[in-house]
Length: 142
Image (tube, rainbow, N blue to C red; front, side, top):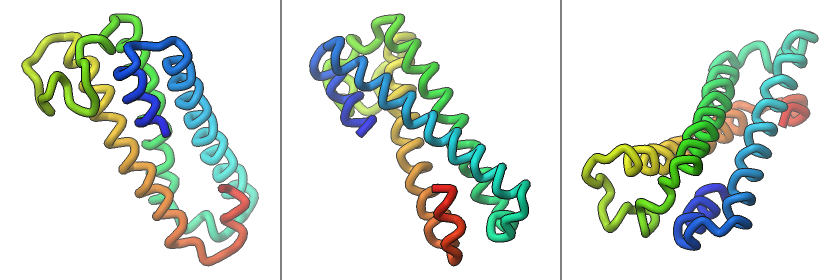
């Protein structure tokens, strides 16, 4: 959903409604990840054995949350520098996946590339939790 809203932000030339929805969706996603991380920490500290054996998921969740926070910062740079207008198409930039370097294009494309990395990271985290969830107690976290 976030990538679709990002694409619409570019294609609709920074329509304020779409830009706002893009930001709100990002903040909600970050909030959800923080909640899941804090909830998992709470359950681990209170002796839920099923969670103590999963340091990989904890690390993945932490780095995904950090990545979403960084993505919000880069998105703010895109918005405040009007970098959303330097690339007229989506997902490429002026028909190129790797356009010539300029600061505004670099900011815009960094935001796009990081979005795809975070999408893959989100899928990885979800599958990691799902594939190792042999106990219904883990569903409390999610």
